[in-house]
Length: 301
Image (cartoon, rainbow, N blue to C red; front, top):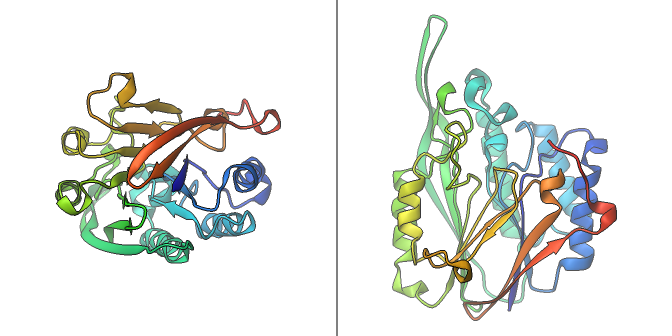
């Protein structure tokens, strides 16, 4: 049996004093919610500005709360570039993306359970920059690549698909938009239609919201993504919008699974969160939780 807790949009700061609510909430999760076979899913915006010091604070917090051996993360737009928008394309840091992917891989390598775990890494297309700045025409490929991970738990019949939903082309017009991309969409379709996983619980984790109607924040290929997961994906976990929402097939949604959108754990939208319990590839329970009163907030970020 496997228990999955979903949180998102940590926006970790380099000043520890600004991370108090974040750390207190994660400590509560660790003390009160985590079970022996629990996995914590953090669906992006782990940091606020993709800074090295913020990444270091996240690693420190996740270790001090004893969650560093049971956590999956994906990259959000705030982990990709400063302030989470591509207007700052000149200072978008390849080093930040490379550091994030290393943290992501180390957390995967740290997963500690009494069942088999198989991790696969898919290196996709490079991030590119295409724009004009003053008298410079910029058209270059990055040294870092869009990367997808899968985590197979054969004993539990669970497949996690960790998608990178950041836009592959850095351009100011994209702002904080997302994109799965053609290569990743093709891989996702192959995985979801693979007979090997026909009776497994298949879970996709990404940051960007697939039904967001704001042009500068939407996922560009959301329609293609939704067509692929239609009646093939069991759980879809995302963040980005800072709005908690759970949409499930028992509420009349025909796509056939559960969509859980987490609010930001740093503000009032993260006062609630969702967990799922899976047994032998079947979702047997989902539960909505509220943080206790002393960990609830009216703060907006």
